[in-house]
Length: 254
Image 1 (tube, rainbow, N blue to C red):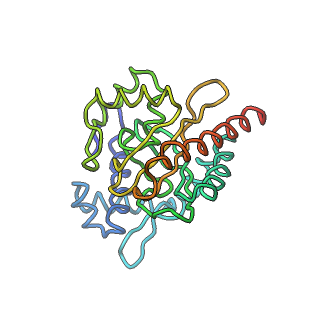
Image 2 (image 1 turned 90 degrees about the horizontal axis):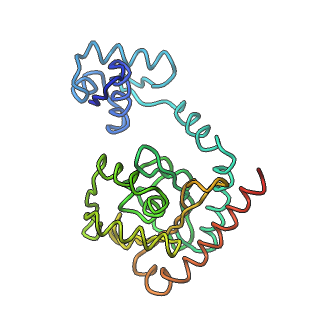
């Protein structure tokens, strides 16, 4: 269970309840109580409150999150005009590159996939829309980190660490900062089987009109296809051209 200073415990419990329903693909009252570490009566009260407010469903005594979260998520994805414009670029980038493409943003020190599309050469992974990932392990995350102040990057490392995802994941701060410096210089960041074994990616930051970091665009695919000149030259050129178009579109639409 979370334990954040200044927070409201009842709200924390409800959030843990919903997370449990997601993790377990539905759960009964007693299962929720055990997972969250609360009495069955408390779990029942929270589930009934969520049910009354349309946030969960009850199917044969098994509770599931409702589609109301989808409505909230769609609002979040379209809250900024720039986000909506990124969706079109993700689609065109997938068609042109053949890879799996994403537009990613940073939230609370982690990356989150906002838009996803799949090209002809792509491999379906667990990187679905809305899911989050450690910034240091993915090209999209490193592209974002490269545009943040060093102090903010260190805050993220202090909070989330540099957990190993595969045998290729960067786990040393010095190595990470070297890659971020290179990404700032070249405009692109790479992930060579660092997040998922067998998958490589290239990403570039997307900046807003004020010069701040909006998010990043990324292309990923099978490591055996996305290697050598393909990932080091061809895909970065395609990616940077798309980022430039997106940034100009954002500027001139304001």
